[in-house]
Length: 403
Ligand SMILES: [Mn+2]
Image (cartoon, rainbow, N blue to C red; front, top):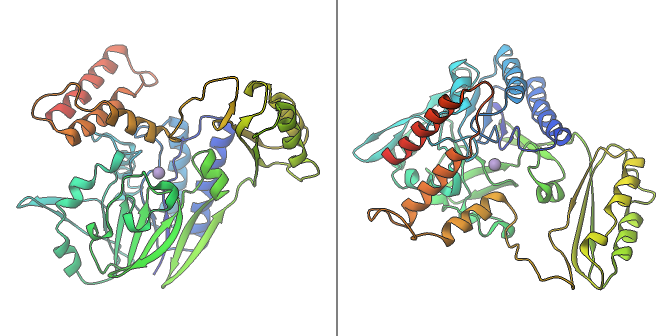
């Protein structure tokens, strides 16, 4: 038994074309390596795409890689993640599945109010695969609460459970605020727990649960992740052995400078010193500047000069992060959350209970708000007519209220 375990590819997740390209190359490499190493099948534990309906060009890239797997007789088993999940049920994953390029293993039925999942059996190896989709803000919790664990645990054979959620027992400190569920939500005794959603590299065992694995994203999805992880990764399971496969497309060079008690000129100088003599050709360069300047404005830090110097050194891409940079001349701005998801979550929570039907509680309102935000965030598609767009929006919003 040999399989690849990928998660959180977030294809289309970067706004800038250059860095977006790196993220696609990383995913492509993961597939190429899987084919070279002749794995029996590939698992993708959610968030293959960054949105439920991705851009055509990105889709084309992914389809061509999935096609390569198909030609090599390597099936792909997938679950929807919090990003490629869509409340209306319309996601591109369904199209890919219809085309025979992947199999969504989240299948089941409700029997006496219990959710009974079915196994998808891999033909070549006999592996039995099932799993649970992920939704935004851990809204999949209600599914887990109704999950019929007993039937899953009784099943014999080599079993894999795919999931896209944070496990409380395994949550790293810096993600403390992230919604999570206890490991006891998952069925015991499976041979492999293929995780996604938490962008960390982790393999752990907790009593009753062996091989709980988070492979990390195939490419980091934001500045902090690039700083921390430096590159994407995945795992290959080979008869009980777990191989970590790094995906380094462009090396990362990270600089972090504290501005505390310094002038903007000193900060500029310190950043320039940090790159002096370094071989940073073709690197992704990250510059983080935080702290409180002794004098001057934050905009006095000469990033133009820094960028010029870096491009002279033929770096591939530069990103700066000055969220933590303050000056004494200005009021401190409250920025306590780093990701868009976290900001959205805290804003929704802050405003809960202001206006809602009597039959809703906080949880229901939160769920509705998130689903509506997700739908209303969708733009008119290429070639879509205005009234078709309006109809689509009305239909999707209507569905949320019906459900
Ligand atoms: Mn993710």
